Image 1 (cartoon, rainbow, N blue to C red):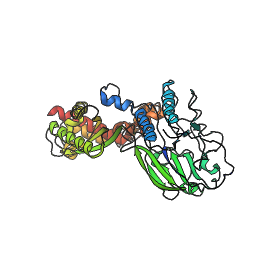
Image 2: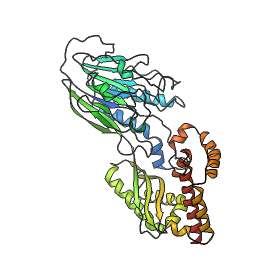
Image 3: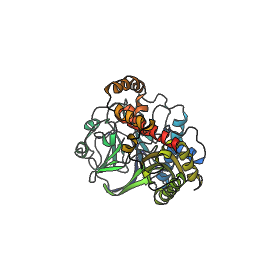
Length: 443
């Protein structure tokens, strides 16, 4: 074990002069410990259990990497937690991981963001001595004098921070490596809420050597020279967080960054697979294409992790109607095919039917039977102001009663049209489903 190192923490006024040192640190953010994962109810098995515990295992992996890589400190730039703890187990898990760091003499600097703002977390536990939390009252500076490092940051007092916090951060300390730690929406990048808004220029002109950012869930480097970095979230939690996830490992020598890059710690990797089924005449043929696509994805991008897949079937096919009305059976068949690769190798989260019928809708509308009449009636309905007004009164009232987080998380195209009050699109989706049901019964 390395010799013990004291973490000298203080507000900095001046230093004794430049130091020529080498050190490494890990920058992570958006861990969302114990974030609830939707869509797992009713499922069981090793893959589902892996997904349920993914945020904890990814953080455990991160701490193991920090110890194995012998880094000098760890920076957590907000959203360590996903919100208020259901019980103390979340805090106890974090304390246990920090204890591992303390045993290896690795301090951790924690900044709270919108999900774990001071007002959001009602339960508290005393952390090990090596954990330093940035104040919510004003920007605070911590120093590691033996390394020549100053870290500046301010935690969120409440969830909705609309002020530019970075503008009040102190000037850089002369002769040391300055790190700014900030949780920010950076103008609403990637559709994220624009908390603690600022611009890249705001950060670059501050004069720091590195900005350790959090809040945006995809990894991106916004400025190379000053190193303005979002590491992305530590573990993808749903289909909107696809691809490799992890933290950022940075090596510094004589106040210059000499090496940096992603450190992948995820245990579940999400992927959206589009599978063309044009030309398929039976669902068994479509399922074989799904199996092949999953196998290729495992070989290409899983890196030994569980691959959580959303399957989207596309293309014009004779079995469009059958696929549309058999989605539950198709999902079970696809999940069974994934299990054929072994436990916790691949898991199918959803099968989306985005195929098109071979039959021209205009021909269907021209039929002189009940099906043709229904198709024409529903086609006219999308332009009927009285019907649209009734939908707004009935469906709109139901939608407005839904909690905001439920409305934001809806992905089904039909339900999304209802939430967005796009009633012509809602009627179009319903028309397609009804036609598929009736056509399938004809067959």
